[in-house]
Amino acid sequence: MADKKNLRTPIVCVMGHVDHGKTTLLDKIRGTAIVSGEAGAITQHIGATEVPIDVIIDKLGDPRLRDRFIVPGLLFIDTPGHHAFTTLRSRGGALSDLAIVVVDINEGFKPQTYESLQILKRFKTPFVVVANKIDRISGWVSQKDLPFAATFKKQSEDVQARLETKLYEVIGELYNQGFAAERYDRVTNFQKTLGVVPVSAVTGEGIPDVLMVLLGLAQKFLEVNLQYSAEGPGVGTVLEVKEEKGLGATLDIILYDGTLKKGDTVVIGSLGEPIQTKVRALLKPRELSEIRYESKFKQVNKVTAAVGVKISAPGLEGALAGSPIRVATEETLDEIVAQVKSE
Ligand code: GTP
Ligand code: MG
Image (cartoon, rainbow, N blue to C red; front, side, top):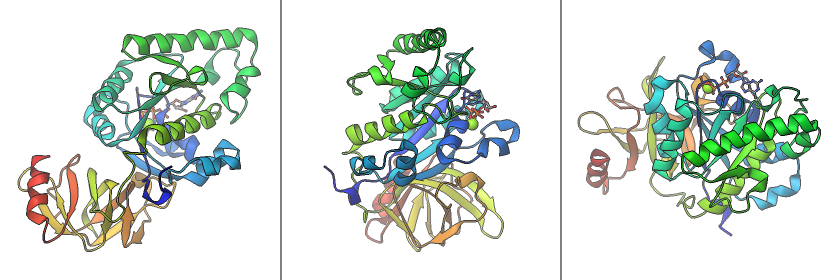
């Protein structure tokens, strides 16, 4: 088993068609209500939220599981499902280790469901499919926060049959897209077959199952990818360039490898020559809060991957969302500048 200290937090991207329930699902996982604060409840930016392993284990309801999982937590990235945001979705897909594709079980596949699958195929990202809104299946009797098997057992035979019919429509569509898929509790080999988890993001039914599958995927397939040298130079991607009162232009980034410290020299991609600057402040949202909605940040001296963090530094105005950001030393500066230019 890998050494706990050297396993970084997996980045999990949540993708899917508009209104299929991505933000609601994340809300349920972190126990907040971001969706009610969004303009028209449409997600317009990429957000990042860190959920520590202890919070996840708590949701699984069995403390004995604590020793089974060695990842330190999961860093979730919410993406917008509106058709106008293809670049944001690709950006999220490109930097994630794992993904959740959310599909409304009653509506089935829609354009951005297909698009999400294409992005994940392109980046060969392991993912789980969430068949959401099972509480809307006619006759469904909701059982708050129960695992899927337990709530399914409590439904009448008619309702169970309706769920299976809708579920196999989703599985059929996945097959048409070139993916072998099955209800997740019928999957014997997650390397060959996609798991589909029936869920209600509103009532919480099936949420423990989604977390369990994600942790399982992280452990099984990513142990090697998630190994990193904690003291290695930081590498990340710029999510957004944002003007902040009193700070000027700042960057929201996802650091996916190594360490980034206050005072570090960083090289950032821009339209012209890469920007070289020194980090003035590292601002971290509190755990479980989302970087987009956080007004009070905690100043930290150092962050370690994977993490969403805001950077304040001189000269960030020309930085581009989606660009790489890399830590450089005096010795590596020329090499890193060349590397960032070519990325
Ligand atoms: P975009 O960010 O715009 O792409 O949408 P989204 O996928 O994040 O969807 P969001 O979470 O904003 O949910 C859209 C609507 O569906 C909201 O009104 C939610 O309350 C509702 N919704 C989400 N999940 C469920 C569910 O499991 N059951 C029911 N009944 N409603 C749900
Ligand atoms: Mg959303």
